[in-house]
Amino acid sequence: MDDLEVSDNSDGFLPSAVEDHLRARMEQHHIPALGLAVVRGGKPVARAYGTANLEWDVPATTDTAFQLASVTKLLTATLLMLVVEDGTLRLDAPVGKYLPDAPQSWEQVTVRRLTSHTSGLSDDVGSPASVEEAVHAAFEWPLEYEPGSQVRYGLSDYVVLAYLLEAVTGRTFPDLLRERLTEPLGMTSTRFDNAADDGTARVSDVLPRRATIYDVRDDRRQVYAFLFPAWTYAAGGLYSSPADLATWAAALRGGDLLSPASVREMWTPERLRDGSAGPFGVGWIVDQRHGSPAVGHSGGPALADVMHLVDDDLTVAVLTNQQSLRPYLAGEVADLLRSAG
Image (cartoon, rainbow, N blue to C red; front, side):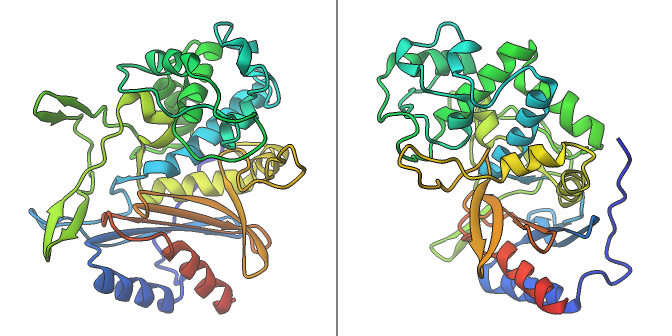
């Protein structure tokens, strides 16, 4: 796999209007730090603004690790398609083909339906200690609707997906992600923090260059952290940086990571039983922006926001450490870049 060099925009690839707009939004919404990744025409660019840690006045850089929350699902989908390309999994195979203990009622639950939130699985799995425990809890609950008949966004789909990937590869989900995706691409800031509650304490690994997350409550800025225990990792546990996301997006676009057919598969909406198109492909939300096809995902709700404009060959990812922000900045940046030509 060819190395990709991520530019710092010293050549002026990003119009000044984009940076001016982001700085204004940071002031408006009390965003301490913001990371930006842009890939256009195969060229990856990363930028960072503001302060990653207010207590120590640490500036954000393009290697600062921001919490991705549900944008993790896009990297999980990428990993899944790598395993599909190996021939180890088929998207339209029933989950029971790979998990023999799955109940008979799951015979219409396919791998694809897990990725598109059309499986019918219940999200009521309690507080399990592991992926395996969470999946066996899901086995015990009846399906909430006929698989493929509706869409219900939830956690269990990706918990089962992680367990399935572990079952067919013999690797833990974090190890598999590292071996197949982050290490080959040189994504050194993309990792899990192994966070857990321990009595009255919250413990986690030390993550180099991690941005502290903040929220504003009662006119006070407070530290805020989402807890994603290990059994939720496929759904929301990753941290990553602007530089790493630019590298990943460029590899997707360039065909270095997945075949063009696999990328199109991820960006094709799942058809429901009534023939209508659901909002999800394989992990990705499939939508439109100003009448043109757009795919992506957000998380946190806007700790991370990724949008790819298919016709423009343009990917924008915006990362922040402001928890209560709504996800709209990636779309605004994409609009500015389209206007600039």
